[in-house]
Length: 143
Image (cartoon, rainbow, N blue to C red; front, side, top):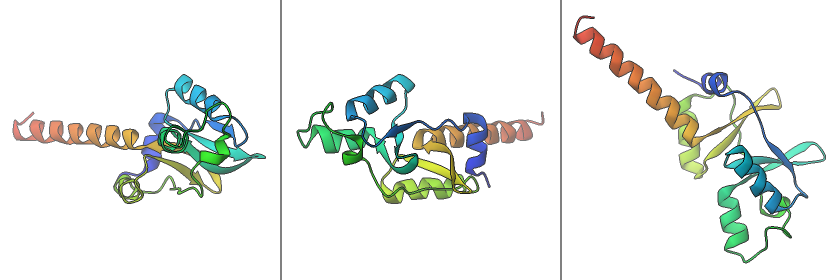
């Protein structure tokens, strides 16, 4: 059974962070610049939450806040739900579905070693299925 370590091996373990006191505007700039949908939120070097595009829409836009005056710490999701590199892809998908979230930090030995998104999981599963289909096609056709 495939686990998250396989995704992280291909994707890398880059983890983008922003300080809880930074403005939501800075967070949005960072996410857009890096083409990601979430950032881990730190306070004094400790990871205290995650801020996502969805947090922005729900807690800034809909609540009538201004992104330049609102600190990330006010809109972040906390506490974090995390997984490990040994978590299976299917289990990770189930956690995301049950919790209605799209991003999960991957923690190993108390350290964040990466973040996976629902897109990462779907892409991995799709490649895996394509490989299996090709293998079966080759087997049936005697190649």
